[in-house]
Length: 204
Image (cartoon, rainbow, N blue to C red):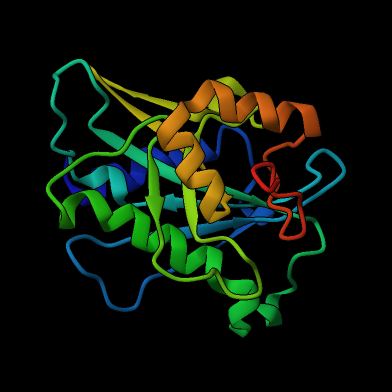
């Protein structure tokens, strides 16, 4: 799957759900490994969130340990409806999700590895304006199920949602597993939308 083919597939998939005027594209000016664009899908009466979605990660196949595992992915992140206006994207406390999606998207290819459901990554720094220091990949409960998988011939492109974590939550899920962490999230009735002030469920 070459880069132009991958972009066309994701574009076509997106247009099944949206009109051209419902999103704008942040085009990457300089690219490493592959060209990565990010779509900004704005909130409306049917979407109570901003959605950032990558297009380009799936142009390369990840080095998975098993042929049955998905080799091609894209990433998204859900942000509050009042997160940003068009002029706010220059603010580091607002544009870190774009930088984060870009860095996570290149992570498996820079490290000869793969990413899939429930995988975690430590950022190595506090995400600007937050106390988050890591992320976990999940399947969204707010996006349509069929939106999160793109069919192409014998391949599937899976779309994973990036969910930011506090450091002790990251340690907890690595030590105890996804089920135990999600049970703590469920008790607090968390959803997929990033809340930089949310409770740290692993603070005692």
